[in-house]
Image (cartoon, rainbow, N blue to C red; front, side, top):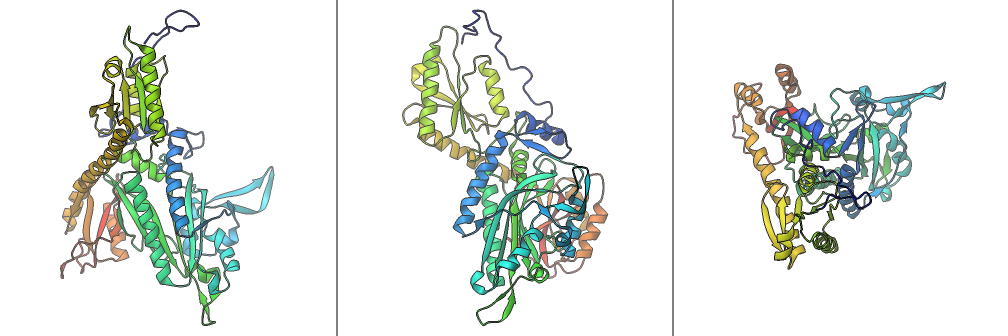
Length: 503
């Protein structure tokens, strides 16, 4: 490729591969690696208010794909979108005691308008139960008004915390929150699991991240709810669990407080059963942590806004125009068959620089076209997940690329599952537990299911790394032989539970 700028008639500087790589390695300094990869991969930009981040188009496009999938699925379930205000009055917010105690430290308050103090400060929603439920009470009168199933895509603010981390913990974040009301507990229970399955699919089918479905302990459940179900992910590099998304059965607690009553078919007054459920761009952070490597992001094809990047590789005296035309034609063919592809024709960067750039951004597949490829009527394809190179003939080209993308998607999941499964350690005693915890394991242990014991485990494991806690009791329970004792208390065990440090 000629480096000449036609307007100036002199050589233009072509940037080589310098200064592109990451300074930190994932295995050596995970925290610094993550902070660097989210910026260098053009996912976020830091903002001048601590704990707030700019989501750049590269990450926003992933959120849009997740949004599109989930929104279509809940519409099939006859759940409707709505929008409720950002502001909450203190009286309403404080109605549910356990709920507000759970959120109190994180609530941000508006206290001024211009120079004047507000007579009554107004809270910014940390979540919308108390915003919505006074109106559920107004709209639900009889059994024909049920079920009421609403969702909103919005932002929430949770202010007080330490260690802000892009995507994982931020002061303002996007999410969807579903809020539903039913006549019976059976309907409520069924929906909780239906939504949880959608969350599993977001992680496993779209983001290629393995998760465990399970139930949170009483200590870890949603404040004010009856029970919480979760999909839990695990980050092998740090040995930490991470709550992926939660689906809560609220029982009748909020219905009692907000007087959400209805007349049932027998003409009797009854209280509704309620659920709430949500997921956030934390999903994207988990994906980065699980798949990323020392070259940058690694995006699963299903969520990558650019699935394939085509790079011309002309040598001196090569038929540059012919190569450029071939690149444009392959992009056109892929786009027409539904593959998200683009070509990088920038002439002030060398092919090597472009390789590094698109690897950093995690594009699943790179296609190179040089003089030899042109002569042989083929292209060179390089996978981002494992670096494997293959030559693909131009005949039936788009179909072969589709197959390759499907293979990459599956391989990312398989490799992540293998790594996660290798971290699971079954323990039966306290000594085994502390050893496994020190080895960054995801610990599966028999437990007596007592809150006091869980608090005790937290207290006994407190240290620089943070305390260990229950992550979830998996729905998929191994056999629990009679007489099995709790690893922490020595009392009879009631269930197997995942324990570990967490984000």
